[in-house]
Length: 247
Image 1 (cartoon, rainbow, N blue to C red):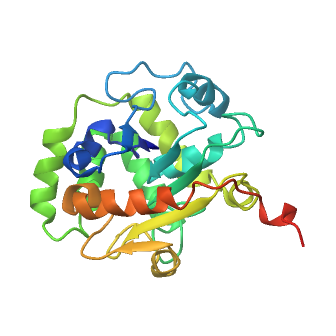
Image 2 (cartoon, rainbow, N blue to C red; image 1 turned 135 degrees about the horizontal axis):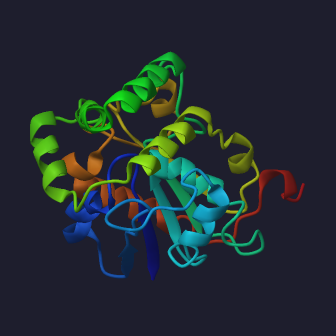
């Protein structure tokens, strides 16, 4: 039995995973919890606190599952490896979808571009969120169709303070050390035409989905489900960090 926990990204609730529902093989169980502040779930008292986030997500991120974090969800899931569960009981693995060790990259989304985006969000959050949802879909084969599907899948609004805290995380969170010392396997999955990732980040992914961008759950749900099952299946054996591996 393979258990997957699917975690969504900035500005998008867990409804985005629904297109994959018809593509999971038997023997795979899937949950897709919303982050606090999304999908009608109450926001954190301090939306930027990773400790509060760990406490809120404790029941949603079991150790016997592979965590799949998409976009900002990949950064947050990696950050929670040090907080949830305990270091002696890590998850079976972590898959980062559409994300690297950090968000900003000179050949992807430069720091100055994200800073401008954060400034725009502070002035007009709803319009800026709508712009982002279109922007992240620009690498899909049918961006307009993908945008319509995205809007149809969204369950409710997102808490503005939670969105602002998420932008702070995209600007400053670097999980390089966490991932290099992770006590579970970590794999990366990317769409070939992801507009938010640098070319080197895409090329360095463990698996690349052709004819897809940042949102393959909308453009290639069957291929994404298959890729996740394959990556999760390879994480069945216990993992030892490289620096602790026997010589």
